[in-house]
Each structure stands twice: as structure tokens, then as C-alpha cells.
Image (spheres, rainbow, N blue to C red):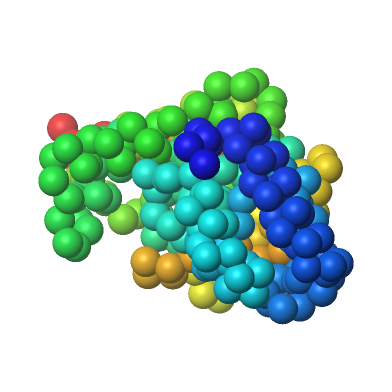
Length: 271
């Protein structure tokens, strides 16, 4: 059980779950009903495409009476438990669409911006914890080193641009980073200006992921909590909400001009 995270670990985990299920004589649908998971989610785990969350693994252990094997078989993660599964799926996605209301998305954050965010958290992190968390977030962002995949769309509420995380210099560098990614077409950027007023995503951050060989996912996050949703009906609902909000946003070109203008305001304030 001392496997490292990666495809081999996911495949071994899927084999373990399938063997335990078949030993009970249950179908994937029957196991899903007992563990409150969709059949497709069970299928993806058994196929080695993803790990279950900690909560899901604990429910699987309970209904299969495994003595905690499936929980212990999960890889150790440096990320928050509720987010670890999402980070694992990011490199597998063909398209990622994000919406953020108060913060720049983690994949797009500069190290100085990330540090300023972490410095505001309670309880406070040690210097060693903060440095390790920044390295972990930077490692996630390496998926953007690929020139085309995954395709990333980011929908930013104007509030995320106006909140001066780390001060004017940090914000100027952060917005410049997003602008440069958008300018070279690595990401698509759309800003929801304050003038739009109410929009369908006011309740909080949202990430949508589409894959070539599995069903799409939605991830919604709150304060120290996060939920991965794979129910087709629920994911479709969030897709429609995202599209409606996107329809109210500035175009990619206009959003880049908007970013540049706010960046210049921060640069002027920093001088």
C-alpha cells in the first residue's frame, strides 16, 4: 500500500475497489446506491481515472466493511483534503473553466500574491508551511507550460481585480501575469464588471472541467470547504449558470484592455 500518487496508484486503487465490490456480488450501481455515489463515479474510480475524496473512501470502506483499507490507500496530499481530488484532475482535463469573485484563481496566482493570501489566513502558517504551500500551488500551475492543453477560461469578477492583495506592487505584477497569458492566447480571460450588477454566479467560486474520456465535473467552494459534483443534471445546471454569466462579461479583447488599465492604476499607486 506504499504506492506513490500517479496513474499506477489510481489503477491499483481501482483494481482494489473492483475486487472488493465483486467479492460482495454487487454491481457498480448497487455499490453506488449504498455509498451514496453515482455509478459513473464508481466506474471512473475502478477505471483508474480518479481517486475518491476522503469522505467517499470512508463511506466505501463502511459499506464494503474493509476495515479502512480504501481510506488508507489514498495518496497523501499536501493540499486541503476537500481540494486534493480537484488538483489531481486538472492535468487530465481538456478544458477548465473557472469563476472567482474575490481572489485570482490559484492556477494564475503569482508567488507574491499567493503569499499575501496565505499570510491573511487564520490560524497563521509557519514560514516553512507557507513556502511549501506556495511550491505546491506553483507545481499545479505547470500545466500551463503546455501551449494548448488544458484549455483554460477564467471568468473574473471585477472585485478580484480591485481587492489589493499584497498591495499595489503585488497586484500590478499579478494582473500583468494574467494579461500576458491572455495576450499570447494561452488562456481566455473575461471580466464581469461591477456595472453588470447581479449575475448567476454571485454565490461563490466555481470550477468546471471537461475531459476527453470521462464525464464533466463541477467544483464549488466555500470557507474551508469544497464539493466535487459529477451528477450530470447538477453539472449541466452550473454550466448554464456559467454561460449566462459569461454572456454578461466583457469580451476577451475588452477584458485584456480592462486588466491593463487596472494594472496601470496599481503601478501608478506603487510609485
